[in-house]
Length: 254
Image (cartoon, rainbow, N blue to C red; front, side):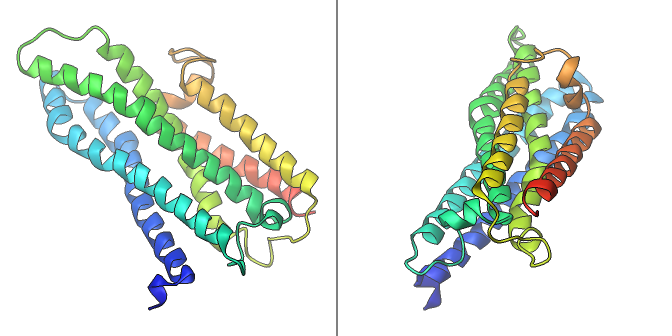
């Protein structure tokens, strides 16, 4: 059966990658576009109950969808890179001498950092917040660390939302935009490709450090303005899409 052939597994892993990525991104956007504004309007008791009953369950699917997305992605890269006769992807020329390779590379880095944010920042901080909600529901004392944990988790979640928009352009665009004959260029110099990737890495580092409170702290000024509302996060993500497209147009197509 073709499913057990290298090409069959490659396509099966791609389908799996897409399915769990849809769950991950959908829950990320639910938390940021729906849950956060709604919880801000709730009475404390109702909100604490929602954290206990709703958010806790959603976070299970959220974090494991993130893990599955990365796992399937790594399997795709492994199979695509190891084929004796290349599937058409993931060889040196692909990464360094085409339009699609460098853009996909940045998308992969965004996805990996988002995954780390989920497991190392958002989930641990939300455990504190939800634990505090459960303590209050039981009539206990509030955890003094809950507010700081909520802010740290929210900033990481908003940053993931910002990353998610260009990530989807890079990932989906690898097959449906950047790879089209009218846009993709073969034989691009490695210098231009590496320059594009270094710019992407620099943007990633700055934004990630900011989301961790290292650049603008935990307040609402400086770069943190993009975290203050979900609309600001959407606008910031769209600015990244436009910026990367213009850079790619200059470096990767001429």
